[in-house]
Amino acid sequence: MRAASCAVAASLLALLGAGRVALPQTPACAKIDFETVVNEAGAALRDLNQQNTPLFQTKLRQLKDKRNWSNDQFLKEAEPLVRDEAIAGYDKKSEELVGRIMGAGQAEPAPAAPDCALLADLRAALKVLVETQKAKWTHMFAKIEKELAK
Image (tube, rainbow, N blue to C red; front, side, top):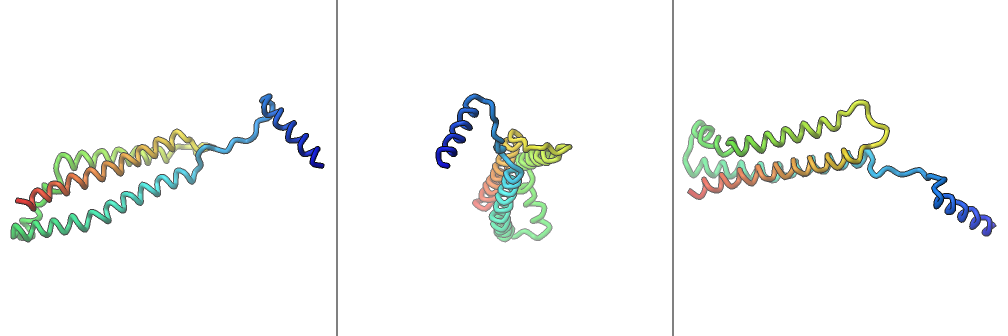
């Protein structure tokens, strides 16, 4: 029995070496890989907002108190801290990336096998999106810190 198993294994190896038998290939990526990448990026963006929004709002209140602004003055004076050309650029880049990501996910009809090149593009776009949002927060914090230091 053992000799028969060895003979079968040897025959299979010989056939594989000759290229006559192709074993089914497992895909290099799967649908779950796409979902994982999107979920991880979504979590990173949520974390950025959860970490930065309360701190930024606190700093805005500190600036309002330091300058003794009324609520109306505050809305007018603080606007440049949250809206400028750089922030508009970050927002535009983010919108373009989201559009690219959403467009990639709406391919019709759905392919039989996942497109691993598309997965690599998705990973890259989501990484740039997260980096863009980090840069936006860094810019906004630098602006408010500068104003608080005056």
